[in-house]
Image 1 (spheres, helix red, strand yellow):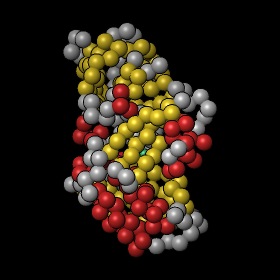
Image 2 (image 1 turned 90 degrees about the vertical axis):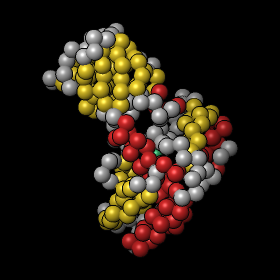
Image 3 (image 1 turned 135 degrees about the horizontal axis):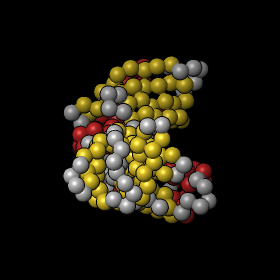
Image 4 (image 1 turned 135 degrees about the vertical axis):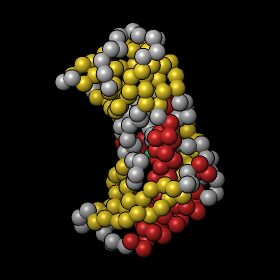
Length: 240
Ligand SMILES: [Zn+2]
């Protein structure tokens, strides 16, 4: 089982690991590691990039990271790495930190939209240039969405701490906002990772987050989009 170091500490920028498998497929080269700080695409958040340095000092670029059939595949720009080799991994921190700030901001904005409208959040995408949240709502009201962004910025300005906890399903059941999630999880999943933003928001989540909302900066409204009868979308980005 691969150890996912980013789940416990999203601020680790470089580390040492061992290659457990090398996969060549259609001229593409992938490595599997015994542990990783590279976030694989998932939960709306795009993957990390970075580099791998072998013991001889040879550098390889990590161009994408994806979860495939339970394995985390780090796509490498060129062949040469071999099984059991020890490597140093370094993530592109500028990219990752922006995604961390954006991910925490997305949780806050999703909660302000929910508080404003009671709409169910149906999806999100956290990327570098812009992020989006989809929600289930009949009325299409860009003014309401701008107001939600304003409210989210007020929450951010409170410098709230972000806490990451691992709890059992039983513990999660006791928290009203998490009980629905806990019920929906597979029986064999023993531990739930819970991300809370002050007392404002609490979610079961596997993404990377900042320690304090003061690190986010501000959310800037970009635009809205209609995606069908009840499907609304808001685009936004974070700025310093
Ligand atoms: Zn999330």
